[in-house]
Amino acid sequence: MINTQKNRMRKIIAGVGISLSIAISAGTVSMPQPVNAATTSTALKASRIIATGKKYIGVPYRFGARSGITSAFDCSSFTQYVYKRNGISLPRSSRDQAKAGKYVSRKNLRAGDLIFSDTNRDGKINHVSIYIGNGRLLHTYKVGLGVTISKFSGSAWDRTYVTARRVIR
Image 1 (cartoon, rainbow, N blue to C red):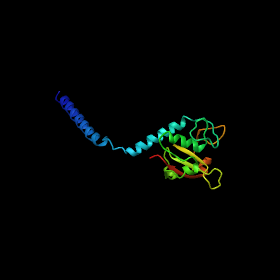
Image 2 (cartoon, rainbow, N blue to C red; image 1 turned 30 degrees about the vertical axis):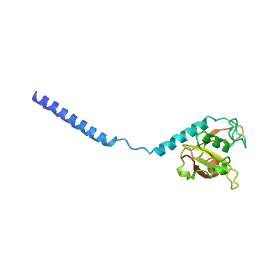
Image 3 (cartoon, helix red, strand yellow; image 1 turned 90 degrees about the vertical axis):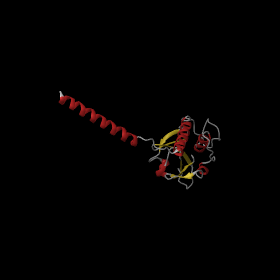
Image 4 (cartoon, rainbow, N blue to C red; image 1 turned 90 degrees about the horizontal axis):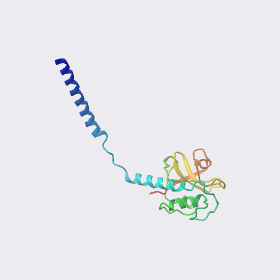
């Protein structure tokens, strides 16, 4: 009987010790970390921009589409419209948009960044798309296809990449 009581007491002491150890270490391990409000804010803006753009998937492509209309877009009227709906003003042409915001390297692309290409290979930017993360682009470029999501890596836009800009602040 005494051995049973001793064993029970050892188990209780061991359990209390383990519980205290877990409680003490959990307090130091699971302390909330400060969140960078600027990063959270830009990520939220990027998500909103991408969600706005995705609403227009399938809308026809038309070269030279007028600004502010949603019945057809060209690449730069699309980006101008989507960003404006989210409080960011962009110039009308892809060449001028490529001067907006700040330069971002290809390896540092984040969702919401603009990617610019020279698909004619004539030394002039002629296409803009929205980087949506995971190596994908949201853009419009072709009659019959309209606004769509495309793969970036290995694509024509990747092979003719000129620069990228971050316009979300």
